[in-house]
Length: 78
Image (cartoon, one colour):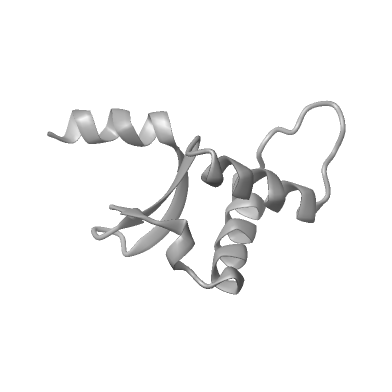
């Protein structure tokens, strides 16, 4: 289930994004980005709808996924 990221308080959203960034070990190219830059990049992906905030009822977890990957998974599950 997609959670509209705008519905979360900014502190909560930042905490979710920070946990995602620290867990995922995302590739940022040749230059290493600071934690605040990584958070800003993920937040921008949410704004641009390139990523979605997803709640898993089965696992009772929140995660951030690329929008295309979420759409693929939804199609497979049906």
